[in-house]
Length: 538
Image (cartoon, rainbow, N blue to C red; front, side):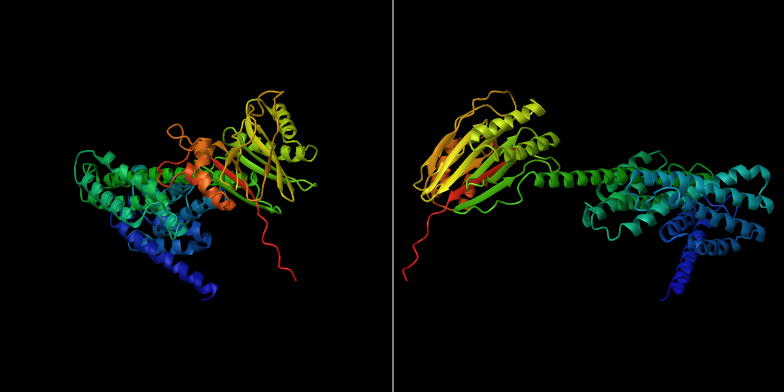
């Protein structure tokens, strides 16, 4: 189908739908044969022109002309009403699309506000004024009836824009509804519950309409915009026919007034639920954006991967804990020096969020810069301490820095600690030794007594560094001491770096634990590889 034929098909389809809805609306006209308190075609026309463009206006004009041609009013009035209905849709679409950044998905509160203010309230005045004026000019109404007819016309059109337009916009823009939190069974249960409560409320004379709001609100909460418009349509499909049959809380009014009241009630339900769905959608987008930024920032604060170190088998495990979107302060760094030695830092910036991210970034890059000029771990930590004090003394940081100098028969290890848990050496014979002298955290005061502790590592020995999130995972109810950790590690002496990490994680975080750890966990293992068998002689 070419573009011209497609356009003609869309115009004729819009005209047919408009005409069918108009016939239903005119069947509920009481005050005059051309004015109904229930007028869905307004919402159909506005949604069509917003979604597919104003070029479909001939479909609105044709549908309005056919619908009003059989009402018995003079041709002049029919043409005037047709012009008013068409102009109303064009004005509403123009105000929404051209003068605002309106999005028909209605996922923002501003979209709902614009739809109500410009579409439902302002543009409908055009049709009410032109149409009522046409009836007055044709002698179909008296001058004294102009106000009441205009009010009925305006409120009827407003109801169509409040109920039908958002339903069509949401149905088109949210298809196939794959991102909704609720499931199909929940949706069916909610639909049945809404139908039952509306039927109950509109078959009794007592004013029980307030009982009908909780379930539509729940539908908006669980199913966002589709849930809001579906709940409104179910409410309208039951409330309006019952009201027209003189049942429910509005039965004592005149036919037009009771239909207006029923339709306005449905419009308020739709407006309330759409506004709630928009607030939830905006909050969800904000949370998704925060999570994305936080995840990206967290990744940037840790090395992308462990660099390969000749003669050393390395493994790392980082387990962020807590709500996504909150950056933790655990970090590590592996620095290869020009002389072949390797610097390993592990630390924990106190707190979470932006301040922890800033402290972590400062610590990592200061350690790297200091390692270019200093070789002693205690001197490197002193440089970091001064840098943190220049920035602030309110955000302490714990750090353990180890320097590994590899040689033919193993390695010389030098460790300095600033408030951090002592690293452990897992000897190949099963002995576990803590290494390091305790000192206060960095970034608190000047003149810290930072010292170096040295030890030799033999092939097969492993160095284990961790943050306190590992041992305090379930504090205060359960704390894993270094001795407990040593007992868990001993059976895995001589194992791979990955096996040692798994053993440490299992000791602190047993699978049977049903609680989530209270803090981020970072675990780093470096194991000296054992020499392989000598090559066979040639």
